[in-house]
Image (cartoon, rainbow, N blue to C red):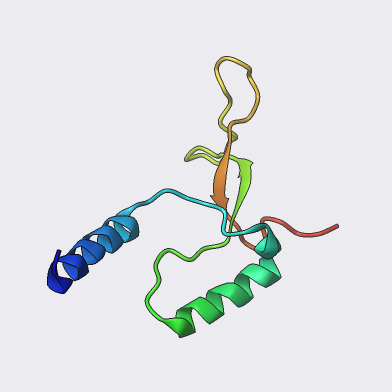
Length: 91
């Protein structure tokens, strides 16, 4: 494999990763909103990045703002939701 072929293969893999939409937790070290905001600021300064959002696991809501219930268990469906300071006020 030549250097040009290798560079092209690496670029294809990078493009495939950046095109993905799967949500993943960054790290347990950045599990508070303050640390996540600091990380996002540093990542944006460092170079190209995409889809940097603070998200949390929460009950999913439908278009009307009501919790989506599982038809089997009748419990709220839990998934990733965008975090906002208004949505998670501390006591």
